[in-house]
Length: 506
Ligand code: XMP
Image 1 (tube, rainbow, N blue to C red):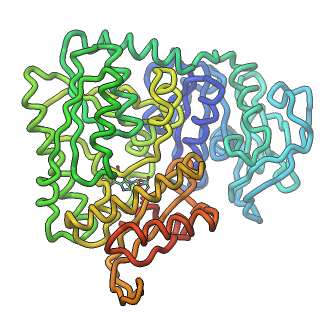
Image 2: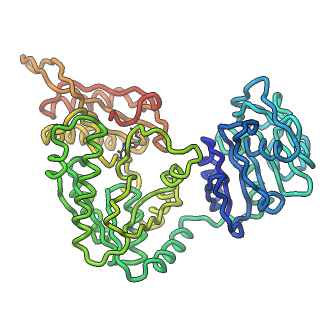
């Protein structure tokens, strides 16, 4: 496997993604927490960083167990780091170098550039530049503005590049990573969904033995895949709980429950809609609403888990981006929205945690799900927030508002499926606004609610853009909503990107 040392770059996760795309297993560790045992790592990549090596408090970990001992690739900050602390020098550049550049190679016989054409486009993002190469450094490539765009250290398997091979705009970036990791470092390309399922099921069996595990299902991809993996490992000792918080999509509770039964999972459906609604009564602040839902969920789940005797483990569908965020070298970021389901459960439950997907990215979870034979339709489902429709009903929540929004949402989502648009959209939903507007139906004046429709494209939910849905589709959907849902007389379409907006309205 491959070790990626994170210096805090926004692109570190992308490096891991590209490496995994080569079917190579990799782990990201923060620079200040290098694993003691490096014996299982076959190569190391140093990430970029928002900081400058010239800063007094620049990250300066001891790499003596790595450099010169394992194949090493420094990217951006990583390249500057190896120069600055290796006898070379790094200076502020006169121009900040962002965006595309053409790479000209000094030696085309260099294995790092195998099958990469002269003049290939690379992506730059830095404001420092390597003025002098480190001891034994040999320049391998330049661009118009960057003399030392790539170099190696003679006598070691150490390579460094100033550009970012992990971003798509570096046309042959993946080839470069393959050259380095596969052809030069000899790392095995054995990370496949089938291999993952085999090893994970074996590990889970060994770890859990005959103990009992409880897991909260949400109907979403992650918890479902986690449940099926565990079910393969421990069978009937897996107890799943699926809570209806009354804020799910229309008919969702029953249809998802049916689907789970078909999959052979042992699922208890708990309808606690009233409990959630009363916890939400009178609350209109978004964070208060989230907290009320999170706390009620914990209460309900705890009550149910206590019904099962002798449970030892709590299983969670945590995936890699959640894990990486929590070890970020930049410290915790500002709370924009508190995602309640990442918060964990109360101490008094005292259960051991098992998280079979904690090393996977979302698309890998989907691939593993397909490997496990989970229905394509379930795996392709749009993400849906834990607090459900509560954060799509702006202001306070009532049963009536939930009903209205469920109807509107169902028309929108069914329409997307009918028009073959569902899979082209990353996430979609409707929002009930706390606004009334005047309309006319027949000869009557109406004064009713406004709903907004939102459909976005994204890869990870961190950034998103609104989808250019066909006018004909919007026209039909708007007609259906206004004609069929009593209490709504106006439909608008949200054309804001994230940032500066967010995907959900609350
Ligand atoms: P935002 O609104 O922050 O949403 O752009 C990004 C993604 O996160 C989902 N989301 C949540 N998911 N609990 C969740 O489980 C939450 O509290 C929550 N808030 C937002 C949102 O649906 C989108 O996919």
